[in-house]
Length: 377
Ligand SMILES: *Cc1c(COP(=O)(O)O)cnc(C)c1O
Image (cartoon, rainbow, N blue to C red; front, side, top):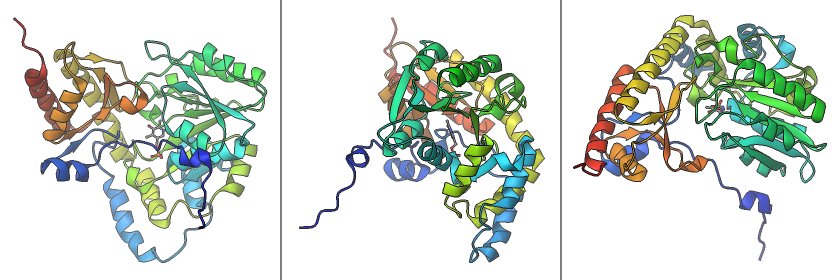
């Protein structure tokens, strides 16, 4: 019998665990109104201009997009004030992470560095590319142990991934610490590319204080990842972009699938980039909601980590069982993110939603805690 045989490194992959979907919760619990605060999506939905552009683009759907998406590349390069030659787009940052891993590192020979815990896509794509992952634990307060990360580097290190603001904690180191790390990595592993995933950087109270890209500092060994999934409200359209060193950008463009950013996504993205008002409203909704939600969680006795992103990491009050509370929330149609898949079974992550969504979450959590906490005498 013929038995096609995938590589062991593909067979043994533990796939990415996404947040639960609205449809799944409707089916399982029969609740009509579901509030999803599990995937850090935009609390205001999508820009009306982007939705109109999408509708208009329907007539063009029989066409291929222009190879390399030059119009979008040009608009994004202008938005982040970098030369077009250094900007690339992908089917979400996920595709960019995957391709960077494959163009920088050789299977069975090179290694990649990241923190533990971190965004799961980095180690998953490294595994499928046959690249060894070396992980340095975060400090107990979820700040970055750059010394430990640097100590893992050797002559075969080709990539290092850091996320700032970090997922799932929301922690963002001061920009100067990241600059220092980039310089130290360049000395220790000159062939390594430091990939700074800034998916949430524009939600930081002071973006320039945490983002090298926003501050206009582009060290020669650094790649920046950004996405239109969060502050631009286009998670479903799948548009990520990166600012790369020029020679890496060149290799990336050669290796890239020519049409991975499709024509509908491209039209949508161009319109979203023109809708400054929507983006401003998003940033304001998130910063107000983050403050209020932090207060609400503290008032319920939770431990909350300071966050520069559009989500909060928290722990329940002493004595509350995470599984029980999580399931109670689901039954009430509220989806948050359990951090089990990050190796943090006692922790949750909740996205900052609209004021209404935040209110529904707060009330459901208060009720669940009241029923789920051991009675005090
Ligand atoms: C949400 C997120 C992204 C964005 O991914 P897309 O593929 O662009 O949707 C990237 N990195 C991190 C850490 C994220 O949490």
